[in-house]
Length: 141
Image (tube, rainbow, N blue to C red):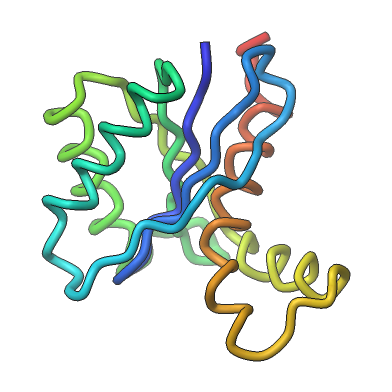
């Protein structure tokens, strides 16, 4: 069994995949789109990855405000969850993603990713952080 982690943004979706033992999350890719509402290709790519890796569950970042209230993006993320579940039949778990972008920035600083390259990696690293947090704190094992 593997679990997929997703960081849903306005024009990108960062993707991470767990190992089979559900111990670690590995960043995989960033799915890009030209417009926020154009999700057909994004959902098709998620389906391809599900088949390729044998994914049985998805963890999707839930962007809450610091006071734990819903953010503007929370509603969009919940709508994206529904679309994924309808299309794939795979359960999607919402996971608090507060501060994952800050943590991703710190990781990029540590490994020396600078300038415009940071935008290339931030969503993928955030997906990895979301999934790793889920693996570390859930009762999956």
